[in-house]
Length: 66
Image 1: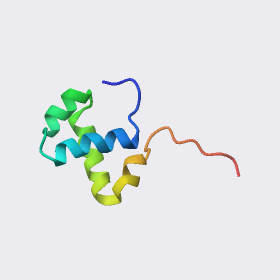
Image 2: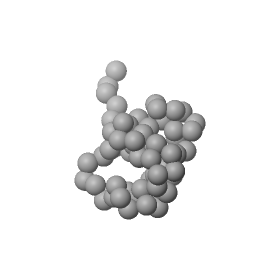
Image 3: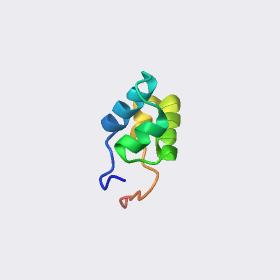
């Protein structure tokens, strides 16, 4: 599994490989070192929110004091 988190652009490139039928989710997961469920989550967010959905961060959010 990659040590760095992928950028939204990198996620989109992986999803486009899958959408074009070049590779399947399982092969993409193996090729890029991610879990299949992670890629499925990206697909879901991309369908719901478009490119912005790939930028959503669900963990380690920090809030500044207002």
